[in-house]
Image 1 (cartoon, rainbow, N blue to C red):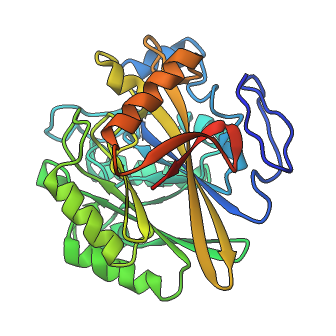
Image 2 (image 1 turned 90 degrees about the vertical axis):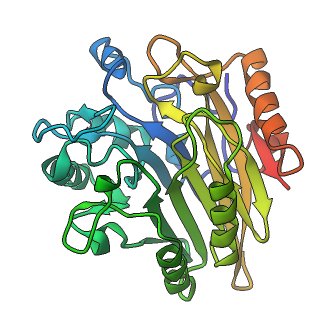
Length: 345
């Protein structure tokens, strides 16, 4: 049994399929998940009638807003762009996403344009059909770079999405569809633009080197610059493994939160994953954030995030603690629940 417990909640087990109510009365709760696709080996999961979100759908809906990194085109049209791997998925997979409780798709990654502009148009249409909001990709650079601003219980939150990817042809331009390009000045200008009327700023960045436990110099320098520029939280994707968590200045940087539903398993680190939670509280006009994580171990055969045994959970947290040494600490028990790990400086 997993326990997610706050003062106003009863026990919730992993077998439950529906939840209601707030996880933390008086707080606005954000939830983040890593890389998600439904192609390659994940097709076997769907063919076997296995819900890839079955082990997390008891928890995600407790968040007021839940974000995931969508690494696939949702289309049956278009031609493959020239690159190593191209992912595409049918639109009905988004019903699984919404049933799991996810609200927002991060799209500034190296797979949103896998089937060109036709595929991206279909993806955007499908997301709108299933009422999933998104950011980081669009018909041109201006559309791809539009901040997503949400207000929950008096707290206004800005979500920004950017990618540092290959090939460069995936980037949007003035009159060209694609993803929001990594551009330090543009990113800082956007942060400054939303900072004036938002209480909390989240920057999602697709960056880094695959399968590396630690962020590279570009990640570290950019992450610090984003916090210095006014971001409160930087949430990273792309390395396909967990990376360092760092508290810097007045903000937090999760350099990579790994795979979530993804066809990779050859290295145990590719199977480590988590739901990352941020509980926001506003007092005297100022918003503070408490961070916690709920670890999962992705199933070896079917790629979905599975509830770990106690020893597996300890292994995941020990690894994350090791690579975050002197940057962040993980402690069992958090304000959102006994089954979570508080992440602090």
